[in-house]
Image 1: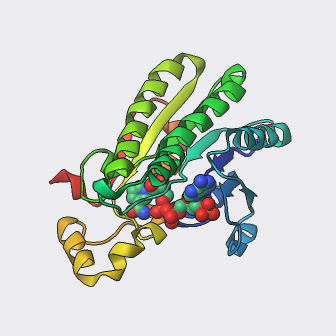
Image 2: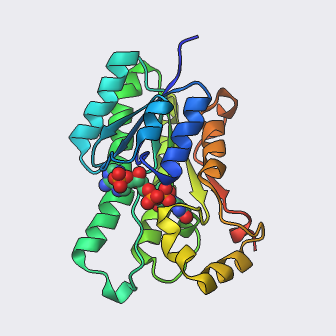
Length: 241
Ligand SMILES: NC(=O)c1ccc[n+]([C@@H]2O[C@H](COP(=O)([O-])OP(=O)(O)OC[C@H]3O[C@@H](n4cnc5c(N)ncnc54)[C@H](OP(=O)(O)O)[C@@H]3O)[C@@H](O)[C@H]2O)c1
């Protein structure tokens, strides 16, 4: 059987890297993107092909998708993972930071979905997994615009799942809780904040990139053929309370 192919945005580190390694280990041909490709020797070992690209650069992202399709004849799955966080009080957010968060976390997710759809619609459809966040479902301090973009990704996922279902597409989201990556460095560095966080998480640990890779693999599998328009929460029980 021909190998399946996946493109993961923001795969140079963190959750995206975890997803890339898991798909490679499961026998997929894996492509990833990121702006900074230094410190990615792991990718060659896992035969993950990394492309340098800003996810907000729509023509470049569309060209990468087409290049994969031309080379392998297929792009079975797109995982929109690249994202930026912010720890700024709402009153202090300036135009530049607001635009960066919205452009990376929402606008680029939409334009990547759109480019993928346009490429795949005559090939029987495709499979999209958007990485949102529990902060798209619940609020917290210092994350106003970030939360807004992640909530918007969930709503957009549901809307696209409905609009594109008839063309053979499935579109789902994963909502990670607090995961041990560079993005949570600020929390990990402050012992009292970290302890407070763990007190709130029923499973009493941060998640790992592998905890997110497992449901991504499930959603990408044939077994998930009847799952679309869903936001799967993977948070150690944080939002169950
Ligand atoms: N960690 C958490 O607790 C957590 C919780 C909920 C949701 N999430 C979401 O999960 C996703 C991954 O987060 P993470 O924790 O793995 O973050 P991370 O460790 O900071 O990694 C972010 C990844 O996104 C890439 N990226 C950022 N901006 C980009 C851009 N403009 N163009 C291309 N790539 C870009 C980065 O690569 P370069 O720097 O090389 O560009 C990197 O590979 C994000 O969408 C985040 O919002 C994370």
